[in-house]
Length: 314
Image (cartoon, rainbow, N blue to C red; front, side):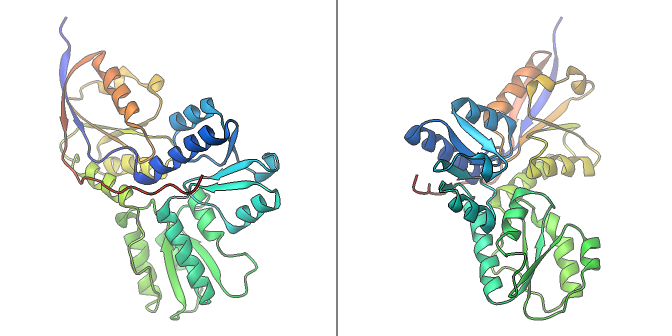
């Protein structure tokens, strides 16, 4: 019995960004140089496959600096950490290696500069996300010079009770897109006309590019697979973009979860991957689909990414 033929389109760009590539390489290089175990504060990137692979090589992921033996090496994740975490690592005589994405480091620099200028800062982002905690943690909670407030929505902006002045500024989580932040920024500017934002766009190029690539699929596919983990902010948003247009979208990062029933009555299938998901998983998904379907694969043209971030001293 012949298999049904489906069209499979692959988004471009998809998968690893320069910051994720750099963070993974930092862990691997540290393991090569110093041997296992190497301790990593939080998941270095938000992807189960990547984390499990690094664990097999000797990386140990911890949520607390206190869980790391004194004088050990510790790697700070791509999402960045607060000043308090860095000080705690120093107090424990840990040898720190910083895998913070350079785009996040840039935002940290802006927050510190604004704090020195005694600005009140509004952070646009998701509560509990490691990047948000790290960025907000650039300002000490008992700081007399500056304060930082988190907003996740326009509703949160309405709740703010701050003085409108030329010392009021905003920054945003890098893994949100311009679409994600536009309404919030517009609301902030409407409520606080004197508010200032970053001179340069702090939105992660990879987040924006992957979202634009998914938008090219809308209206042309009846199912879109997003390779990524549930705790990956940018992967979840890729699926949400499709769902907002009433297109079936499935977030998957473990092919053992794959269900043949997902393909029922689907003729045109799109595939993309979040910025922390490896291409290997895209190929594994294709293999799963091939078990029951004949597929015609095409690559959708998109922005070519050429950014490379230098490694820190390891």
